[in-house]
Image (cartoon, rainbow, N blue to C red; front, top):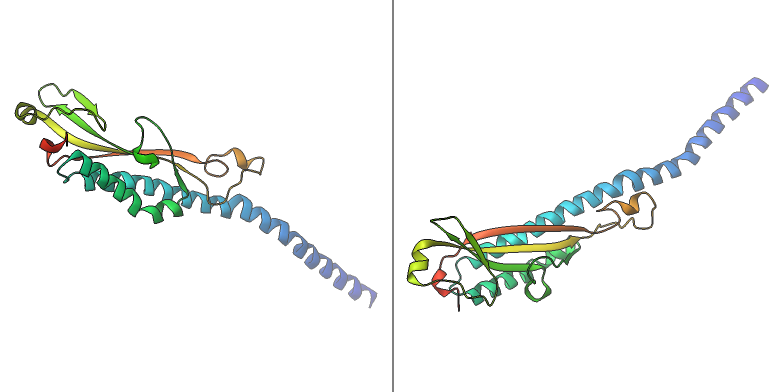
Length: 190
């Protein structure tokens, strides 16, 4: 009988030890594997949203009759994609030309000379050459640039090793540029 009791006690001790180690092991599993993977998925959604804002802004601006209408179209596109921006925890980042009303999105007109390939970028308020000779010699495109900081879904800022990793503890700056041909270059100065 005493030998059998010893075997039962040793079985209990092994089971109890396994249960005691389960909690810390799960904590490490979630902190080091699951939450960073969720942050990676959130970051990829943010990058996709930045690309979507730029692409849709350029495509919506292309058929506009005037530059002012194109700017308003990009602002409307920005407003319509609020759900995506909120989900990806995006905040506007300022780089290059000043963005439209702190939206993180900028629109400009790129004029390319067909003979030399030289490009000139015109921002809001600049006079774009669009007389009849220029219309025949140039290619006109709207260039929409989106600049955002994509924040992590689970912020590991307080954890020593993971807090310094961009995308886990700090926001990641993401910028994307899309272009679309201007369908009505005669209205660029309106």
